[in-house]
Image (cartoon, rainbow over all chains, first blue to last red; front, side):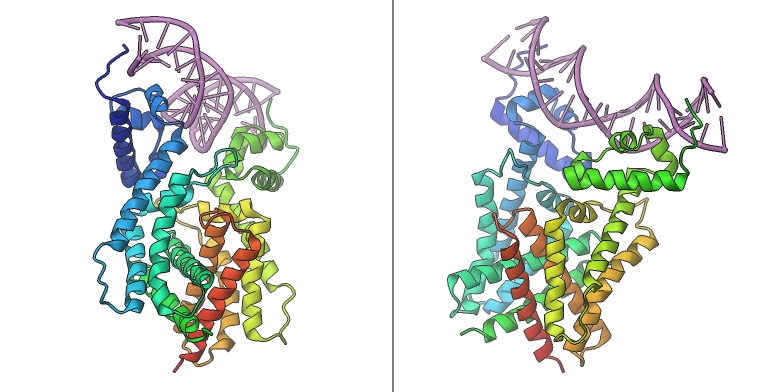
Length: 202
Length: 202
DNA sequence: ACCTGAACACCGTTCAAGT
DNA sequence: ACCTGAACACCGTTCAAGT
């Protein structure tokens, strides 16, 4: 067989991504193999390598979609009149809920480590930054006298903190705690951190 | 060939762990395979399965050693006269420095996810708790009026926070920041969190 | 009794050869 | 031109068979 031309490369790409995402959601990253993705879309493995550089490339594109969805969730239902502090806490809640409701796709983002020879592409970094920027913008009104670099450091510390709680919670490294406990821990982190960050500004 | 009896199973176990750790340190977890470990100690793959249940079991034992070393680092050079707040910050520094100086072994602890059918053994959980207890004990004098459960929640939030910063720092998810920036972020997290946690107690 | 090594069921990745 | 499918170089894990 050969020369089927049933689908354009663009179409094959989208089909492969959709199939890969379904595998990830259902079985986690251990279940994702090139052969499975290929057979799911009715092509052979070789075809996948016509469309993606390798499996890492495919994973990166799944992660890009995941970041887009997360960004959507974080900016959706934005209620500008809300008190800023609540808005920040809400962002944390959204993140944690996202991680719990879609643990495999969420975990995939952090399982991927950039190798030395293939550095993270710019389009990917940009998507990651876009999510992060939401936090930074929300934090700003809460400490108006802080410099831009202080704010971005605070957003970093805070978000990494939420993320760490999420990880240890989901991977059960803190014992068998549910989403509610994780939410509480995150809230405690944010409230106490903000108390220091907002009050002690120049 | 067969029946060599050059080493007891105990000895083979130790040799295998040592060889595996060297591979991890030098090549990271991707480089760790049962065949490599076996050939490194002069036995065949099969022998490894006489001594470990599987590769996961072997990794768990490496992680146990890593946790022991981390605990050692955190309790070594304890200077009781030091101000408590500095001691806590020092713990954070030790953790971050540890992660940076031994990134592969550190990462291995968090790459391992407990599967449903093989839950984390008690002896492992105990070792993880022992590290965590150091944080909790150090935190206690800083907020003497907090309840035990508030303290343990705070230790959780704080430590998970440090850990999150560490992860995002080392895996370059915050851009290409060095150990110094990570240390600063962690310090910012601890100082601001403590400010809220100590001052707002009943 | 202790260990081997070959086998099984998989991988990611490549690329000559079919249509 | 487009895709195949067989090949290569690996995996983790098992277990009959050698000494």
